Image 1: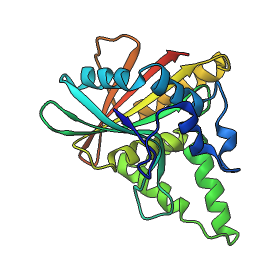
Image 2 (image 1 turned 180 degrees about the vertical axis):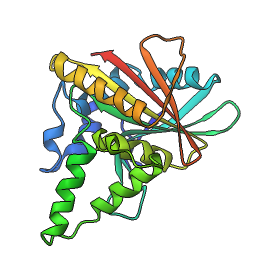
Image 3 (image 1 turned 90 degrees about the vertical axis):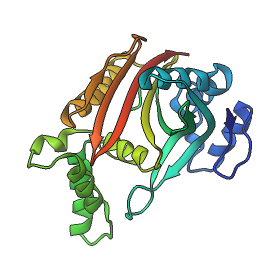
Image 4 (image 1 turned 45 degrees about the vertical axis):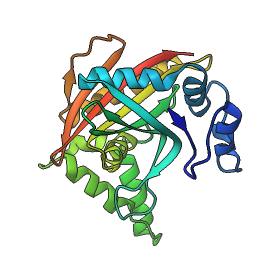
Length: 240
């Protein structure tokens, strides 16, 4: 598996990977024990690409080959501003030559962001007070992709999961997979980690995902349909 940045420059070490966080706006993300560093350590030092490959193969029931990984890779999913920045974007193929995209979401105990309710109200307040933002329209369109009848509980789900799932499909592969990688490092907080897991399971329940039966007990799998498109979601803890 080749690891490269979005410009095609090869990444072979943690030092190479760290260059992605070399600006004042991003440097705070690169900290040992937190998600960005842990994702890099997992791929570079723990053969994480092979582990992801094996989990995807198990979920699909066929051999797969992950060919390329791009950290911090943006994928546009609508016409409203910036796209989704995948922590790691992985591209590959199945033995039957179907294309695969894996959008990896790395966590230690960082949350899945604010609820849809809080995000929507914040951006709507900005609109009302004269700040230009398309975020309320983006949220409304994303919700409409999942909820076809009025349901106020849809505002309780985490906004990050809402757009992460849609953006994984937007990569345009034959097979789309969102993989939440939770790293238990020396900075992991059990209470925060449990809350994140509960938020993840709540999201899967609210959007009508169906559990997958996987042989590897450490992996939790779900399958859902978004506007006729199939999405597989995987969640696993890793000790680092």
